Length: 356
Image (cartoon, rainbow, N blue to C red; front, side, top):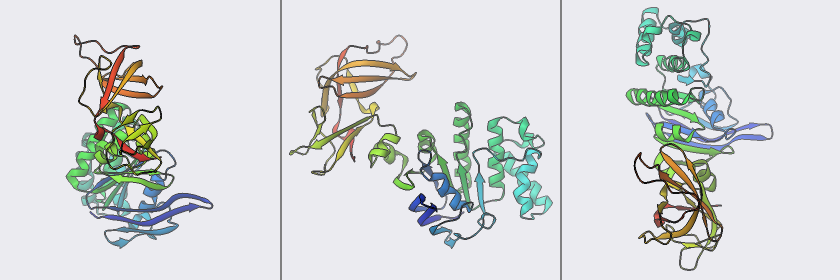
C-alpha cells in the first residue's frame, strides 16, 4: 500500500482549465472521497492519478515515486469504473483474471488469487457465469474483485454506485468500506452523492470549478462548511446574507439579530448557514426557551419525508427558513400544521458564518 501526493496538478484542454492547481496528500490506507457536482474536476483528477489522462502541470507521487509520466499499467493501481467495464464474452472468473494474465502471472497462482478475490466479494459460486447473467450489484462486485486481484498499491473508484438502486447502493457502500478497511488499501472514491461520501470516507474533499473548496473529516465538512458553495452542496437549506453588528452578533436581511459563533469578521461579506435539523420548534409562539436564538414564525408548509417532516417557516418580516423535525410516532402527538404559529429556536454554535 502507498500514500498518494498531488503537487499543484493542472489539467488544461486548450483554453479550458478542468483541474486548477490541485494539491492533495492522501495517507497510506486512507479512503478519501472526491465530492462535487458534474464538471467540477473530480473524475479528471482521478484519471490523472490513474494515468488515463496526461497531466498538464504538476506532479503525482505514489509511495514517494514520481508516476506523473508513467502509463497506467506501470502504476499498479486498481480501477473501478462507473459502468463496470466487464468483458461480456468472458466469464466472471475470466474477467477477474484478465489483469493477472496481462501481468504474466502463472496459472496456478492466478487461479488461487481469482478464487480468493471472488470469495472476498461473496461471488465464488458465480465464477462460471457471464456478466449478463448477473444483477447490477453482482457486476459491481466482479469489477471490485478484478480491481483488487492484482494487489494494487492504490484503489481508484469512479462513481462505483451510481448505476445501482437505493438498496443495492447501501449494501455495496458498506461492502466497499468493509473490504477497504480489511485490506488497508489506499482508496480514492469519486462521487457526487453527499451521503456516500460522508458514510464511506475517512476524509471528504469537496471540489468546484477544478479546485478544492474544502478538505476535512466528514463531520467537519458537514457541520462547518467553509464557503457558501460547500454549505449549499452539503444540504444547508438555511443560508442568510447579513451583516455583523457592533456587539459581535449578526443581523439577518429581515432585521432579526442573532447570536453566532465568534468571532465574526468585521466588514466581511458573510452569510449565516444553519442546517434545518438544528432548529427546534415549540408548539406555541413566544414559548420560553433557553436557546440563544428565538424567532416567532408561522408554518407555511409541512412536507412529510418518512422519518422526518420538513417545515417551511416564515417570520413577520418575511424571512423564510426550513426546520426538519422527527415525524411523530404512531399514536403519538400530531405533527404541527400549516398556519400554526410556533417558536423556532437554536443555539449560537448550531450555525456557522461563511463567506458569500
